[in-house]
Image (cartoon, rainbow over all chains, first blue to last red; front, side):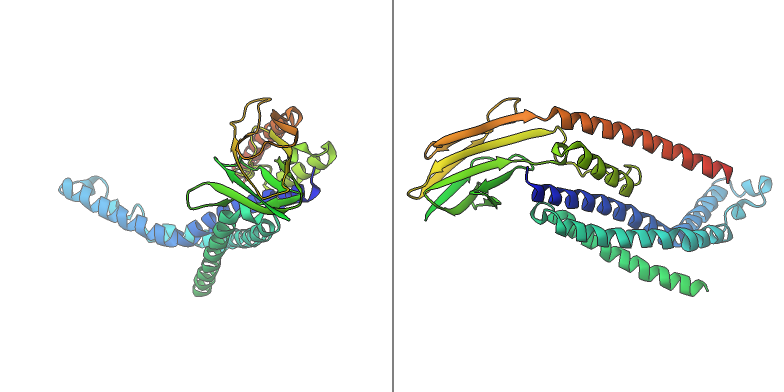
Length: 144
Length: 170
């Protein structure tokens, strides 16, 4: 049994695990950073939907529900958005950044020829994570 | 010095490695979609095709590696799409060819079949000696894999339960 080949297998396997972790971290941080935007879109959709229903019922829905247009507001999302930005996004970005760097290092130490695709993919994830880091720093800087 | 040119009629089995006189070669895809390898060899060339995998390691080393993977992949949750030899298939070919003059071989890999032959030489000289040419399944490695997967499933369920409990309590 060739020890060198099995050492490469070890680096390749570990690199793939770190790559999976980096993808998960990037998805979570992407969702956290975009939460404010997605939340605002959701509220706008809600207003549109509420207006269409009010129009369809010739505004009689307002008799039973005077607060029809304020069930969901931007204020509700403020707290969630702050929570996501302050507590979820920073660790997720840190995990994604560390894991993507580790995955590239491990995959390069492993069987490079067989994991070329993964190395490219991890590099793309690293780039995306760096963009997210900048976006997060700007958002956090703006909120303070 | 003479040249040994090997043309592969179909894809080399997944994760198999080709060695000629102890040096590893990666087959290159030609324009006509076949894979080929060219090597400078002496009067005889030893061709070896193997697929080493971690399940074949001694138990202690395999266990340490598996625990490491289990820990870094958060109790095995992120240890997916990492295995290239799911069925623990063992590929073993060792043949010596006479290469006093340049030699061109065309070989064809057979599909995996327990105790079946790995490859056939369909063009060129037959090997002088052929000490191994067979597929098999590593039953010990397969058993280890099953145990690791069972441990992963149990730990994922336990992790989900603990996480749920923490969320409910807080």
